[in-house]
Image 1 (cartoon, helix red, strand yellow):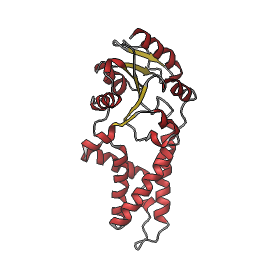
Image 2 (cartoon, rainbow, N blue to C red):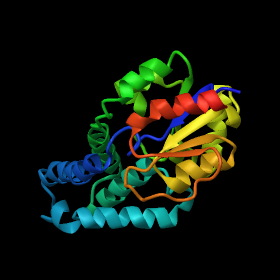
Image 3 (cartoon, rainbow, N blue to C red):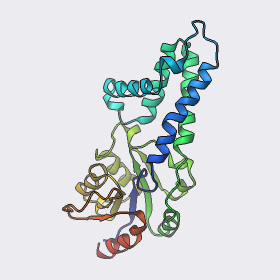
Image 4 (tube, one colour):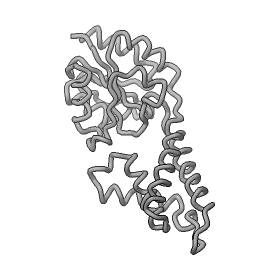
Length: 243
């Protein structure tokens, strides 16, 4: 039977994520340090000296170890790390919560400064009339904050489900919400384990975007390898024709 649904990973599938994170990671924390250190502290301590960026990153790692069920919820981990640092720095609970929320929102503004590949919007405009489209991501980009979000019928933030890919639950949830079955759905992503094998083992078709040129490997049934999203329309047409 022909395809009736296509789901997508986001980061490094529909846009380059590395430059976005390389900017967002230090920039949002530098903003928080500037805001806090502009406030007079009784003991004269500066957050930038007590808790530099490396300390913030270490707190996040420790939180993932302390709360393994939440390790995939990057939003919660990041905001909780800022909250704990601000508490330890001496802010009141209310102030720490307020500034942690502000720091996280600053991060999210920077996190959403993504630039989809130029082929993405025309591709979705054509497919929206033919397929139901969905997102299954382990990241914390909320595609509804982007113009691109209008094309998607279903958006699954797997980390917030406490079931990050390659867990099957995000895929099964997407299938249920899209009203389809695995053999009539295609998943597109860049990660071999989290996207390709996870989808393929459920009976979905899968397209592996091997942007890093990891090289040829033996592909299991229903899996196609490409190196850029621009190759996707021809692959989808072939899969749909052969399904």
